[in-house]
Image (tube, rainbow, N blue to C red):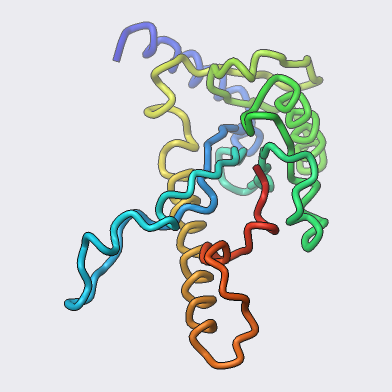
Amino acid sequence: MPSDHAQRMEELRSLASKFDVNNIYNQDESGLLYRMGPNRSYLSSSESRSEIRGTSFQKRKQRITTVYCVNATGSHKLPMKYIGKSEEPNCFCDHPSARDRYLHQKSAWMDGDGFSAWVDWWYEEVENKSNGPWLLILDNFSGHDELQELENVTYFFLRSNTTATYQPLDQGVISQTKIKYRSIILRKTIDIVSRMQQPNHGFKSNSANAGGVSSKRSCLT
C-alpha cells in the first residue's frame, strides 16, 4: 500500500477515535442488475449445457443503483435507497410505501442532486437515533462533491483505489446483500414456474413473467 494511503488511514483512525463508535457511519452505492438470474446452474443427466447456457433470464441487464448506509457497530442499518430511471415506476402502484425509498436519475446513477437529497434524509435519520457529533465515511466518487455543511457532521473521503480494501461496506456487506436478493428472486421464480405447471394456475403464458415479476410491474428503469 502506498505510504500516502497508509497515512490517510491513520488520519481516519485518529479522527474516528474522537467519535462515539455508534455515530460513525459508512455510505456506499452499488449497481444492481435486479432482473438478472444466476449465471450458474445445475444440469440433469438428460440436459445439454449448450441448450441451457445463455437464457434470457441470465442476460437481463436492467440496472438500478442501491444506496447502503450503516454505523460502525451495525446497530443502525438505514433503509436501503434505490435509484432508477423512471420518475414514477409502475411497481409503486402495488407498493406505494416504497416510493419514500426511491430516487430517480436519467442514468439511474447517484449524482450531486441525488446525493444532497440522500444526505438530508440521512441527517434526519441519525438525529432521531442519537445525539451528535457524527462521522460519515465516503468514497471520492464525483457525485459526492456537492456536500452541504451540517451541524455536528464531519465527512471523511477515502482515497481512490483504496475502497475495495478500506471501505467498510465493501468488506462483504454489499456482496452478501446482493446474494440474498438474488436467492429471493430465484425462489420466487421457481415458485411461479412450479405454480404454472399446475392446472388452472391462473397465469398468462408470457415469457416476460419468468423473472419473478411481470415486466409492467418491474420497470424501475
